[in-house]
Image: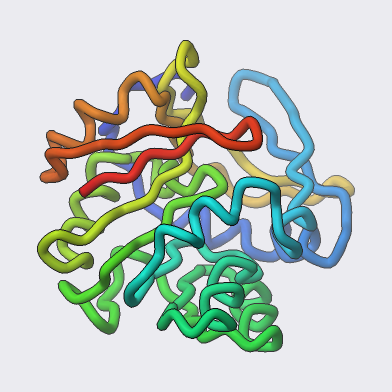
Length: 219
């Protein structure tokens, strides 16, 4: 499936099956993202092991307890912890959680749709590095985060630049002839984030860009 509408129903079970391939990328191996329509692009997972230009803008907006959704190896969770900001990373990949903990950040092997500590009390929740695409259903994801953040809380999401198209794609990860299962992944354009946020219970969507990255703060 390629270019589906936002809100198409999907599950996360196939993404869990890709964990071993994703872990290969975290160890520095070459991993590719294969699309159902035949497109292929490198994943370059190792870039998430170190700070990325533009991260500081996100970190500066986190003043209270912060939930880092799809935290990967935990660069943002660890950075917040070192600043004295209570933070928790959650990820479905065991190695990602292990790397976060090794670096000094608290993390759980958990899906965002699983029961989570602090429900309704998080000041901020992060969806960086395209993680608004988790599950292929941004509506379901943002509504879940609305439950997790406290009244007046904020979701900070990284989005695609204005002029791009919001999509739902069927993808899988592969390396050296080994492939994971197919799963759905979404992208959301900055053009579409405000109406999407309103639909999910966030009346305000502030957009900004820095270091060629686009973000939205939903509150």
